[in-house]
Image (cartoon, rainbow, N blue to C red):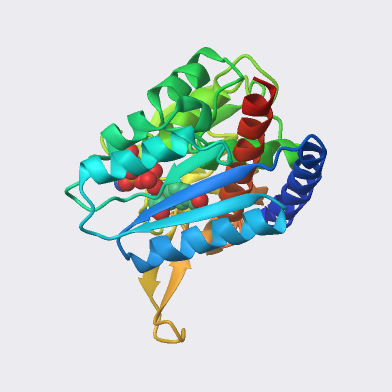
Length: 295
Ligand code: NAD
């Protein structure tokens, strides 16, 4: 039987509806959650992400502001913008769109964001809170979205063999930290694989829940999947497609065609993890507004 699709678009829509309701309740207390997105340079893919983040905020009744800076922006100039946003009471969440032009140091910029407004969850304070299980911090949006997606799809993580392929700071590592917590929606037995893992398939084949974030189209094939496993494909890779008007199409890291014949549940690309990431960014912004508003 082919795997059932986990529909990120409809789950994200449901979450965005709930966020709009929370935002409306905050508005009754005179608080309008506000997100500032800083975009440096004119990378077209980043511009598309930034626009969709702004649109999603508008739809939920939140305040959003995009700060477009030239590609030649210096580190002190960018830090000044971040400091201004840290002090701006209309802004509860700050996101600096990555990647940054090469004269700018992303780590320094991330550390300059007030951790209470770090809705991307990349500040070391928030990563530390995630690891030790403190709940007032912010969890990076993609892993948070995956956990929420599993929860809303009634996929049991407790005691499950959870295998993660990829150990980036934005997906693999925080995903592992989340799933290993002693908490609802977690309690998994986590294995993290990466570029140096010997015999990747031997690990992926043990997974009840396999999460792949490697950025390699078609890396995971059907022979690497345990029958009935749940497969979450984070990858977003552009591959040439002369039949598409854009000349390319988006594919994940998982060979969907073959893997969907073995797995029990699977996320599509696009329409799986991607929409969840934006929903969680909004959710983190509302959480920031609630926490800052209550302070
Ligand atoms: P990254 O390049 O920072 O990290 C990739 C990781 O995969 C590394 O840790 C590396 O060790 C591992 N890896 C690479 N090749 C491997 C192999 N052959 N075997 C085992 N491990 C291997 O990537 P990232 O930022 O974590 O992103 C991963 C993918 O997820 C990309 O395609 C990216 O576009 C996508 N992504 C999607 C979303 C979303 O919202 N849908 C969000 C973030 C990232």
